[in-house]
Length: 217
Figure 1: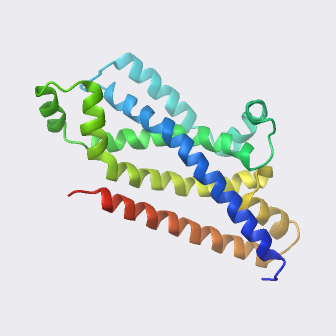
Figure 2 (figure 1 turned 135 degrees about the vertical axis):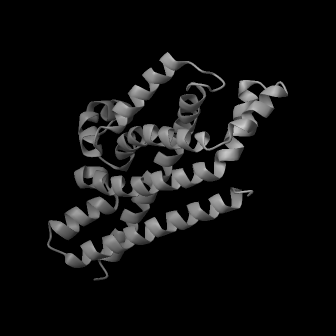
């Protein structure tokens, strides 16, 4: 790899980390409450509401079924309205967040279902409110699993951020297309792939470490 590529690679990596990190923060802040809502309104749960849960679940499933490439293009007017442009790393975060929220919601719901219902019943017998059960029983008990699920989402976001780069989102995907593919630079393509692999390995390692630290079993 020639020396002129290293600054470009460093800049692209920074843009990818920026997109993934901030998209994860925003999507997690919305996705975890969404997952909790999906769980507690399900049949037999503390805030059972079958009609609401089914409608919310249908909306989540509909959003999850849209391929990311189509989503990026479909919401360009919304992205432009929200951030003033449809090109660049900040603009790419809009579809990344929208794509991640329903994914995180379902993953969190799955993690909450793993919590033994006996713990919830014990809390109810002691007079705990639904908010207390969520904050002191469901979330703490499922947190190792939630972190593992969020790690999976973060890795998926790395791939989607590279896809966003292909249509002007910046980052490693943009570098691979503009400097690797269009300029016939296989060394740039190879370097981009290696950096993406290393980034994914780091995210997986960090997620596994945090999950194991939170696991009290």
